[in-house]
Image (tube, rainbow, N blue to C red; front, side, top):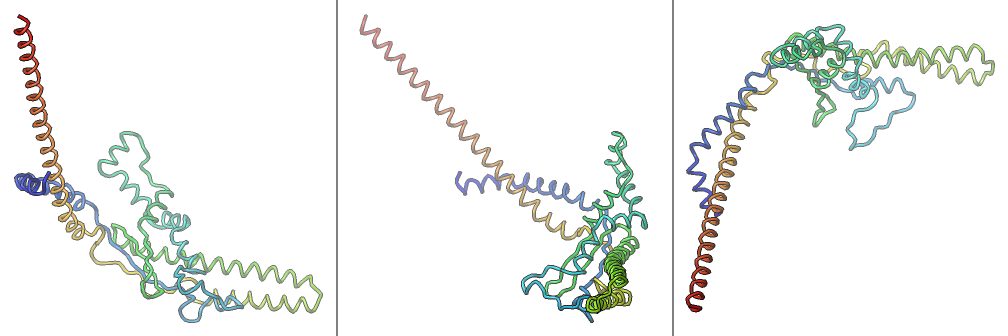
Length: 309
């Protein structure tokens, strides 16, 4: 089909295309406007190894060598801290110390999906797996483009709950790293002390005393330092107005996508109509040719019979 004919066919359908675009925009805008909005709590943290007197430098007898200039992945205690934020232990802590399970259970029981679950006898109460799934979806960790800082973001419909959960997550992850390092140092101190009690070689005892001093230094650093894994650059805060989902952005994208989709559908309808019209014309031409062929054969039979007579 030539482009000029396609444009004319689309122009003849402009009214129906505009109506279809409005219908698509309304169908897309309804869930965007009805979707519950959530507040976003944010905190900016930085690895403790890169700020102030590095805890890792005090814990390690040898300097730490980084992975390279092109490797921007977090490492050391800070990597453990980031993984602890989304660990099952963190979800269990939120389920135990906050109203997360009650919130998830109320959301599962609300609306048509809740009625459908009740009709089928499905589970409505939230459990630890639901809390872990919610935490993995709602907690975002974004690395700064030009700095070593990381932004922690947590979305929740309740403003106070979002701020409280983010504070608890940060404290839980920091306490996890601190407890691991402190426990390891305490076990090493105990093991070295037992070895010293049974060792009589002077040279070996001197080496053991050096190891004991290193582990005691580690225990003192962990107990005294404010931040072992992540240092707060900006304390957890929560916005005054909900911003998730971003309704203006979604409606703007929908205002572009709906007319485009309607225009494409209109062009497809014009092409299909032209194809059906061409098939009908070809069928008519084929029928006429067949009729002419039959008439010619009848005339030939008639002439043969006349010649025979």
